[in-house]
Length: 459
Image (cartoon, rainbow, N blue to C red; front, side):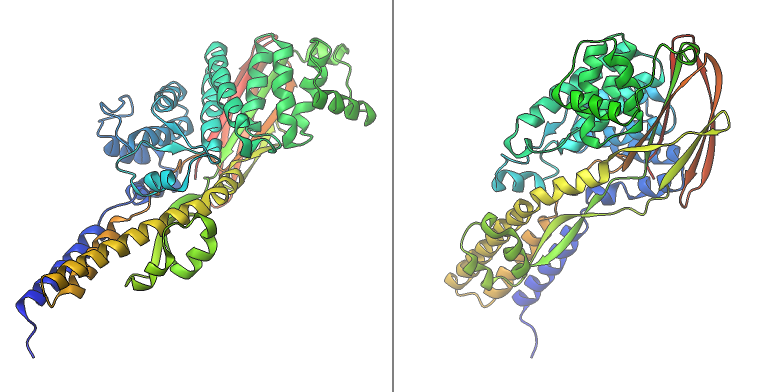
C-alpha cells in the first residue's frame, strides 16, 4: 500500500529536522582542531584556530563583541600564549576575559538556573567554576612574574584574594581544606618579594592545606623571623618544623652568600573537558533523585527515552611529568595543586543538578509532543503520531548540552624553589610522557633578586 503524501511529508520533515539539529557543533567540537594542534606541540596552529573562532586576524586583537563563547575562548588563547612565552599578551587575554565572565555558585544556583546555562550556551556568558576562577588570577600572576612586574602581579594577587574570600563565604565550601592553594603560594611569593613579610605569611598559611611542602619550609622559617604575623595554622606548622630539626639559620654565612632565588613553576597536561553523553531515563532519575521536577509518569509516553548531558572526560595527556636540573643538579619538583582533581570534584558536586535539569527538559519535550499529538487528533489528522515524533525529535536535537569549560587549563601545577648566588644559571627541564622534550633556559639573578621560570605545556 502506497504511503499517503502527508505521511511521507512528515517523515521527511522528521529526518531533515534530526539531521539539522544533529549538525550543530558543541564547544568541544569547535575547538577540536585546536586541541589536536596543541597535542602535537604546535601552539601557533592552535592559536590560529582560536583566532578564527574569535573572528580576529591575530592574537594581538580582542573580539569586538563578547558573545557567549568568546570570553572562554580568549581564556584558552591566553594559556597557549603563556605556553609560547608571550607573557604580556597572555596577561592581556586573561585580564580581558576575567571582566566578561560570570561566577558559578555551586551551592545556590537552582536546577532551573543550571538548566539555562547547561543547554543554552549560545545565549549566556560562560560561568566559570570555582577552580577555574581562582586559577585565572594565579596563572596571570605567573605572567607578570615572568617579566619581573611585581606590581602587576600584586594586582592579580588582590583579585585572587577577592575571589577566594567570596568562594569561602559560600556555605558549601566552608569545609574545604584550602581552595586555591596554588594561587595562595604564588601570591605569598609576590608579597615576599615586595618586602611585606606579614602579608606573605598569611598567603603561605593558606597554602598549608596542600600539605607539608618542601617549597614552604625555607620561606616560612625566614619570614617568621622578619614579620609579626603568626596564625593558628602557621604556629602549629612552625612547631612541627622545630620538632623535626628543619629550622635553618638564616644568618649563616652560606645564607648570606645565597642572596638570590629561583622559582620554577610547571603547568602540565590538561584538565578534564566536557562532551555530550546520553543516559537512560531510568538511570537519570535514579541519579538525579530529588533534583528531578515535574511528573515522572509523563516520561513513559516519550519515544526518546534518554537524556543528554555534559559529562567530563579525561584527555590523553602528552605530558605527564617533568624533571628539573639547576646548573647540572637535580631540583625536586613538588606537586602543588592537582587542578584536574579539583575540577572533577566540583563537577561531581553539580552533576545531580545537571541531570535533573536534563530530566525537566525531557519532560518538557514529552509535554510538547503530547500537545502536538492532541492538536493533530483534534483536527482528525492521521499523522498525529508522526507530528508528535517530529516535535519531540526537534526538541531532543536542540537540547545539545553546553560542553564549555576551560579546556587548556593545566591539569597539574608543580613548583621548584631554591636559593642561589647572584649571576647566570641554567635551568634544564625535561618533559616526560608521550611528548618527551628538553628545554634549557638561562636565568639571570641579580644580587638580592630573583628569577621566575614559567613552563606551561597544556597537552
